[in-house]
Length: 359
Ligand code: PMP
Image (cartoon, rainbow, N blue to C red; front, side, top):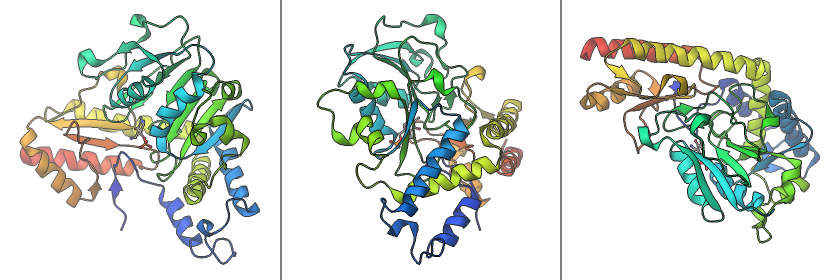
C-alpha cells in the first residue's frame, strides 16, 4: 500500500494521477500503445503537450506575452541557460541574493559567464533567513536579478517578491504552483518538475517574450530559449512521458481548486507541523519565523544521538523519506502539493509519540 512520502524530490505524486497513468499505460485511450510509444510530432502527443501548457497557463494566470517552455537538463540546466540567454544585450552584471545552497550553485554557474554581485547574503546566520530588501547592494545596470524563492535544503522561503528594475529571474523549483504568483513581476520563472509539477526529467521555464532576444552568440543550441520557443519545446525529442504526467498533475491541480487551494492547504499543513515543533523542547527548527518554508521543513532533535532511531521508527510507521539533506543531517519533511493533510497529522502523531517515549 502507498505510504506517506515526505521526499524533497523526486517527490510524492497525486495518487489519482498515478492511477490514471497506470490505467493508460498499456493502452492509451484505445490507441493500442502507450503515450511513451508515439511520435512527439503526432497529433495525439501534440494535443497532450498543448493541453499541459494551457492548463499551466490557466493555473498561474500566465500572460500571453510569456512563453512556456518544457525543457531538459533540470533546474541545473537553467543555471547555465539563464546567463547564456540573458547576457547578450550588453551588461554582464548579475545581481543575486545568496540565500543558501541552491543560490550558491546558481552563483557558481553564473560567475562563469558574468560578473556576479551578491545583493545580499544570509551566510552570516548560516542561511537561516531570507534577507530583506533594506540592506541590498544592487548594481545600477544588472542584466538580471536572480533569487531562489524557496531554498529546498535550508527550508527558507521569501515572503515577498523582490522589486527590481531589471528582469527578475526566480528559481521556483520547490515552490511553484503552491500559491498564486503575479507572473508579470518576473522576467523568467524556472523550475525542475520533480516537486510540484511531475516526475524528474523535465523542467519548465516561463520567459517574457522580449527576453528571448538577448542570448550570447555562441549559446549552445540545447539551452537556447528562443529556439525552444520557436519549436514548441520540440527542437529535439522531449521527455514525452514526463510531459504527459505533468499534464495530468496540472489537471488534478485544477480539480483541487488550483493554486489558491494549494496556498491554503500549504498554510494549514506547514502550520500544523511548525506549531507542534514550536510547542516542543524535543524538536526544533532553525529558520527565522518570517522566512519559514511552507514546502520544506527541516527539524532536529535535541539529542542528535536519537536521529537514527527516529528515522528507523518513522519509516517503519509508514512515514517515508524524512532524513535531512546529506549536507545538513537531521530531518526534513517536504510538504508539496501531493502530500495530504493526513500525512502531516500522522507525522505529528508519530513525533509526539516518539517524544513521549524518548523525551
Ligand atoms: N533549485 C532548487 C531550488 C532545487 O530544489 C533543486 C533540486 N532540489 C534544483 C534547483 C536542482 O534541480 P535539478 O536536480 O532538476 O537540476
